Amino acid sequence: MKPIRVLLADDHTVVLEGLRALLAAQGDIAVVGEAQTGRQAVRLAGELLPDVIVIDIAMPLLNGLEAARQILAAHSDAKLLILSAHCDDAYVEQALELGAAGYVTKQTSALVLSRAIREVHQGRQFFSPSIARRLRTRQQQSPQGASGERARHSAKLTSREVEVLQLIAEGKANKQTAAELGISIKTVEKHRQRVMSKMDIHDTAGLTRYAIAAGIIESGPLVRLK
Image (cartoon, rainbow, N blue to C red; front, side, top):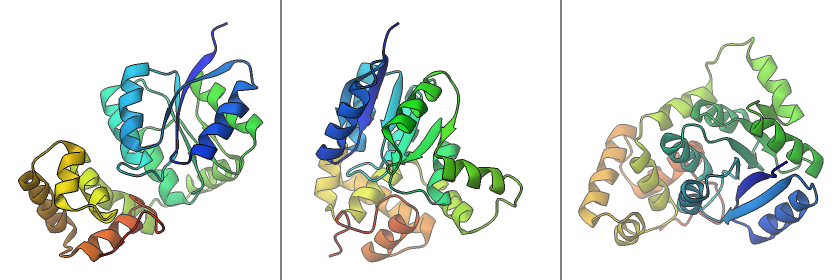
């Protein structure tokens, strides 16, 4: 039997090394690629066509959720498993809306992660037990609420606008953003203005606060206010 070919995406080298070692010990799972930014994950997903993509949410240049959206837009049959330290409902909802096949927390064991990869590979969904319990409860409740509103707000932005917003919130100047995305500075400025208009936000600090609230970036080392 051929091993399940997995692409790992996480911005921490030590996490990648640990995951690679844990999965190699399973015997039926082979790590065929590793990415440390969302942009690398998108590129490698197209080049390697892995069976399962295990991707973190908090990554520089392009967050995991937006990377997942771009991967699925280009490869609708891609099977994505979110592996994140974040387990609040807003992130889970966004992942499900994008089409992720599963969501497990970084606190999970190697056995649970390997099981999740196998389940996703077989075309089934898989969630960490705590997330699965919450999902069952929420199915009986109204989808309204702050987290749902947050997801809807993010949906107003195009994929390119989310990319520009993340780079701005990470402290990148227009020139740096243009170079990263391969577009002109004028185009970056147009995207920035459209984001501000859609979100009714008129300064960089406000854009950064919105990016944190929408789950596009984390409040932490990635955020550099000027």
